[in-house]
Amino acid sequence: MCGIAGFVDLIGIGAADMPGRLQRAVERLAPRGPDDRGTWSDDRCSFAHTRLSIIDLSAAGHQPMSGHGLVITYNGEIYNFAELRRELADLGYTFVSRSDTEVLLAGWKAWGPALLDRLVGMFAFALWDAERGTLNLARDRFGKKPLVFRHDGSRLAFASDIVALRHMDDGEIAIDPTALRMLFALRYIPEPWTIAAGIQKLPAGHLATFSPDGLSIRRWYDPCGPTRQRYTDEGAASDDLRTRFDAAVRDRLVADVPVGAFLSGGIDSAIVAASLARQGAGVRTFTVGFPGASAYYEERPQARAVARHLGLQHTEIEVGPGETAAALDAVFDACDEPFADSSAIPTFLLARETRRHVTVALSGDGADEVFGGYRKHLGEAPAERYQRLPQWLRTGVIEPLAVFLPEGKDGVWQERARRIRRFLDHAGKEPAARHAGWMCNLAMRELDALFTPAVSPAATDVVSLVATVEEQAGTSDAVNAMLSADIALVLPGDMLVKVDRMSMAHGLEVRCPFLDHRVVECAEAMPGRFKLQGGLGKRILRSTFADRLPEEVFSRPKKGFEVPIARWLTNDLRDHTRRAIDRDRLVRQGLFRPEVPAHWFADLEAGRRDTSWALWTLVAFQAWIDRNGDVPLAS
Image (tube, rainbow, N blue to C red; front, side):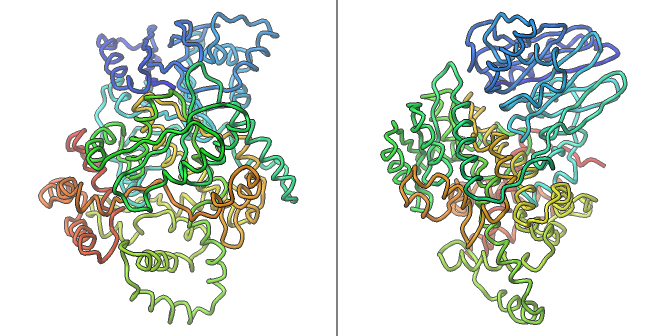
């Protein structure tokens, strides 16, 4: 895993300070690649690279790397590089290293963009062809590795994150109002937007080509490809899934450094660990725990039982209350734009401690989005049944009565009431609006109440995004339509951002076998009923791998990788909350109506309403402002 950055001026850079720009970008990217660093320039192109050595630890893997008239700076891992290398050797190509980077150079020379379809792995790379004066930027199928860019006529700057990119092109930034509204709706900013107007994320599965003819961006991978065979027999689907998943795990053991695995008390990481055990990998597993936290946030006993059952060497990591608050600044430093998924905090701490033992860790990330593991997925069938009730009963009786349900997170019944209210808010809507509503932290009316008129509603909102994705998926299966939106929006915007930023802050590479494209395509070819049925999520995973794990692993209630953020915001992190909602600060910024966050905090503190997600989003935004100054709103 690595950090990359670069700048291309097709007319000619002519910037005397380019070495300084490259050095500043390298310093920002150093945590992503602590083992080596390098720069390269010609009269039109400059590349910077920081390296985390995983395959071929020798100097022969140094980047930026040149060969065959091409230069590359690359972040990622290609698990099938040895197979591709043999194919290329048969075509007459020779190699001086054992690195996958050299295979990418030869593969692009041999096959051009068709190389991308052959790759098994995760990647973001920039490839400069000086003879043609062409820069190619490519990103992996599901957006595991980040890549942002800014294009201005004959110039283009790119990097692994926005901070490094700004060092490369030395440009000013302004807040994109559409991105700001998306942030408070979703807790993250979906691609292609970034918080900075004019800076874009290259979408997952896309290729950008920058040449004298201009900039073109095209999609090279579609997870819902229409030519794939559909499963009608669950047994056949299960057999294929088992074979593909074990292959994905085996591929992700390719490394010249120690490999481990995250292990929680849930299904997904346990399935990964079981596959590792069957393959005799002998890797260590790691679990984080928070002493003094309630049982809801403690998974060490369950993880310990799984590791014991599988005969794995297991390590438990304890993180005290003080460490969490102390790590918060480092968590925000690792983010190049506001990011408000609070599970980034335990992910950061787990990655930090795991890195003391191994350089690579496998995880169960992606299973929920691909196989239907969230509560919102389980709400789809009840929502369809709810819509069949008479309208007078829904709008005249049930929904008015729901207003009187208590809300909060202080007890089981309050939490159930909160979920019922959330269900009723969206169950009666059309599918795309319903799915978008379950994704959102704040509804449209709440966003309108929060923002001043300066942050006007954009033409693009979450509902239209979800509707576009689900239409492109081309399926009448409501469950699969919802999962297609998760794969296109939630994975590259939230889950994979969290994993990448928090792990790479410590130079730890995380690999996700559930997001091997062969596994995802297998899942996509299944009807939704294989994944969700009878109030049971990830049903196909439970049946396919039932013989590998104790039954209690599959019967435990679903828990996310969560922290008690509501309690923290009113206790341990109270000062952060107070600074975020400070009235004078909010008035000066001119983005938010100060009374709205004040009510959020009062409601949370009094236990009237759980507003923790909204407050935490504001805390994350203000932390980004603290690091970037009073950034203006783009006009």
